Amino acid sequence: MLIRYSADDKGRPIKKALIYTKDEHGITQDKIDPDALFILKQLQDYGFSAYIVGGAVRDLLVHKTPKDFDIVTDATPSKIKKIFRNSRIIGRRFRLVHVFFGSKIFEVSTFRSICDGTVGNRFGTMDEDVQRRDFTLNALYYDPLKEQIIDYVGGVKDIRKGIIRPVIPLKQIFEEDPVRMLRAVKYAATTGCKMPWTLKRKIQKSAHLLSPVSPSRLTEELLKIINSGHAYEIVKFAMEVDVYMCLQPAATALMYENSSFREKYFQHLKEMDAFQREHPDSRLGDKLIYLIYDFAASLTDWKAEVEYNSAASELYVQTWAQCRNFVLPMNPQRTELEYAIRSVLKQLGVSVRIPKKAFSPAKKTGEETPEIKKRPKKVNQSREDKSSRNKQIDTVLKTGKLKRQATPVAL
Image (tube, rainbow, N blue to C red; front, side, top):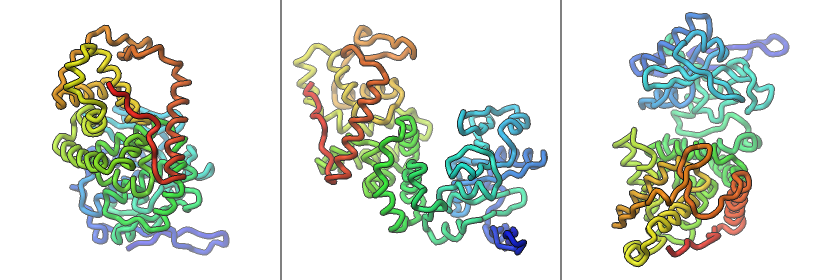
């Protein structure tokens, strides 16, 4: 094992990082995506440092095949763009580069500074960048060309011990970015690493911080869970630490109130995971079926309703509206949710043809919009949705039991 040193204010050497060699970490180059290796080699040939970072290093250490290879470098986004023509700079506030190889996308980011805290966006050094990482198991830098892992925070030992330990102090880690709680939950549910009691308790006390997080960020995190193939384990742990109420408040409400619904919901999560593992490239609508099935099935006696009610379009529009509210704050593509709802109705033995006049084209997006009633302005609508979600979350935090704000309309 090698040791990287730096000097203190008086010029005395202090240990800064451990460097694990190939014999110690056991990772071989054949485990690395050849296109990721090409990116690393190109950056280093141009005089920049470049490393594989994050979950890929963690997976390689425990002999798993990484899904993604994220790369970090001291090259700025504009310089990365000049090196790779098959790339694009993305992000306004947090700029990074996507490098394309066919259908594969590699994320290449620049070392970040800590001068603005752990959520700032200034470029910095590797020594600063590691202090911005959320947990030690995610704070390892691997150079496959030199076959070395650079460990500033004891991440290798924590992975081998199976412990999730934060890099950032507990008093500020979730206050600065509440979404880190969701990452901790995912790590605990999918890596086999244990979450210390102090971290678990901190998440439970900080769950309310997820309330003001934008629906777009929560949607992004939910989609990651849905596509992970481990949604059951993640949701189960998220319920345990009281954060699922912020991701899916309506589903959490029903699970607190109805043990039968809870069992069915979890069973369908298991089935969704099996489907995702078998069909990793399936469309989102196929997986939304598993999330909304039990709720949609409980709305009414569908066969009797269709026989009695000839207004098929109105029946569908009401179902769409309630399912849309059920998955809030997640905001999936309208076409995917419509696909899921129609598939669920078909499985329930209901064949509903939707006349074109049941929808009117949206002015800007070109999407179809249900003609239920005159829609309020988008800004006011989002405020109402957010206020409703906050009230549900506050109820759970205060009483431990979430009551539904409204009973589904009998269709």
